[in-house]
View 1 (tube, helix red, strand yellow):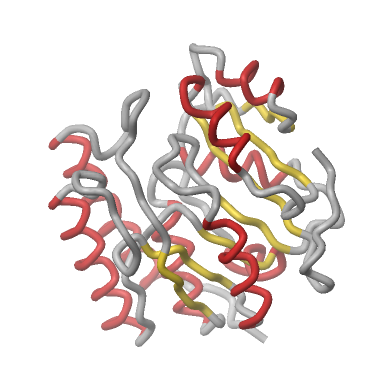
View 2 (cartoon, helix red, strand yellow; view 1 turned 90 degrees about the horizontal axis):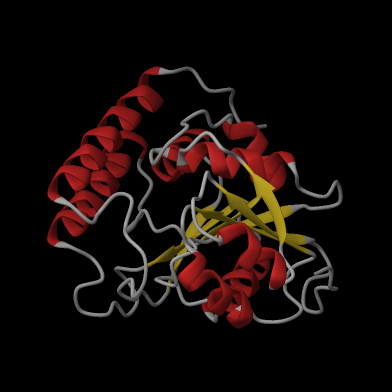
Length: 243
């Protein structure tokens, strides 16, 4: 699935999609990714027991296998398999909650604003009723307020749809193996003073499969605790200063 990126003379983009048992949604998602945006699309099969890998391969994506479950581990496996020429990486969930049509405006704004990190904010955009639970909304509010208090950087969301420069990502030295990956990325970017931004994106309810985090009260509470722990670790851990 190697294509040229017509609107981007400066960056060569790749897309990483971590996937755990998302065979029902993945084929539709990959078919909806706008043509011409990415030179590589990598689906990381994170220990699925369904046909996730087969569906991804049939749709033309490159399949990377990471049997050790964990969102951060899947993202790291995708990063390790990037083509050498990739200069910026987008991340998107596999469950079709994100709208693949938003990828084009995300990449275009990233280019136009010369950002290091650009987040697709679900809270600034349109969200289908029921797509974000009250606990998720509260967790977003609390986490982004804490980032603002600790480092003076404004975010409105911890949304999974995002794009980041490859060299900036290397400087962040992300370590979280599970669902603290996104908050760690934003916290470390804020701490280093990287150029960050947000644009509104659409968000929909999951219509197939099962959520690995927000589907249950226990899962949501665990995610909240993990987010707070990750913020504390980012605050107290020394990170190399940005040049």
